[in-house]
Image 1 (cartoon, rainbow over the protein chains, first blue to last red):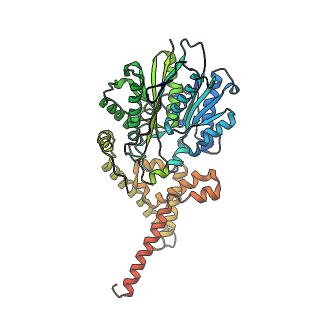
Image 2 (spheres, rainbow over the protein chains, first blue to last red; image 1 turned 180 degrees about the horizontal axis):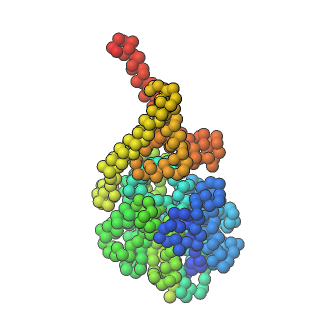
Image 3 (tube, chains in turn yellow, green; image 1 turned 60 degrees about the horizontal axis):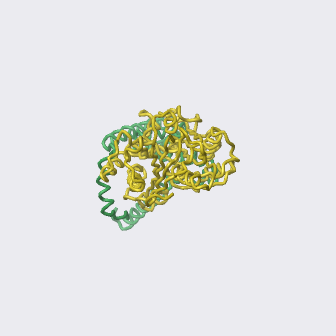
Length: 338
Length: 155
């Protein structure tokens, strides 16, 4: 159901039957290693290109989530997924091997929540019984496309972020028995916001205004107070973008407690890992949410969270043509059903 | 031409500047200086090696020296070490001939998955192409100027 200008309330409360997170070698040495279902030792993952390994990440995330939900892929009505690679080939090739009717999505690093919002809408409005949604990224495949060859000796500035090699997926179902289960309750779809940042090594600062815009719209549309949520977590604003977003929110009168305002990009790696400002990538928010955060919710650490995935909608070409970086953020709320 | 910022964007720029981690320029310059200098020192040693152990003169030793330095860059790039040096040294490892070697070699390694012709061949000079183009063109211009000045008896 539409609420306010750009939000949906899911009164039928789609149930997250299961979720899974897959990661690479760097993530295996990171802070959330124990919350990953599958961790790979190297970037090739037994495949003969980084792009093929990227496809494997999403396949594994989806297959593991389906397995954990104790259903088969034939039971799934739709698959909603995306990534950062040109023409989203890793997601499309994963859809090929999974054989599930497929919506390919592009929201850059906000794809995970774009997918969860649409998947929730489908289940809530009887458009599907079982849906799987996910997002993924692969550091080497994406560096190759957006920046430089992985072995090139360029110096990354302190504002740069590290693309996560990983992905996550969740199976959403229409389940009458919801007691104690994780459900999606609302979503806010973001607008494209461009505050003139044009440095692709400063994505956090480019995306912060979009995150703030969507969060403000969410609380306005749903007429809620930020204290409703135990945690508001952004996708990949990291060290630079997260404090900027918090300042923008405070300026708009949303008194969000900084202890309850976290970021997936800041959670995934340890201090000694050379990631400059923090993690990023379509797989960042997906791997952290569909692994660590949902695990924490099952343990009872959080009852209600708002996940705001943020994406930078640039291309290598747009940067060369002196364009600034337009960004978008999508928010989905997940609660433990009483 | 960079776009003009709107008033809203200019206001945001102020907020962003407060939080942006600034590049440590002085520290980077010092690191670049020492690493770049060390690479040149190695290059000089290689040049002397060719001059005293083989029959190269100061003029002709340049060729095998450059080839050897690029060979070292190839080993360091292939072993995954050059990018770590690059993160530390910045221009110090990018500017010397080893940096040029690294740009070509890293691109060649990266695009092996797309085959030799379109992949490796088509992408190898993605980064180094400008160096070659502008290097050759500026050499041409300078040579032309020198020739004209010589013809007119100025030099």
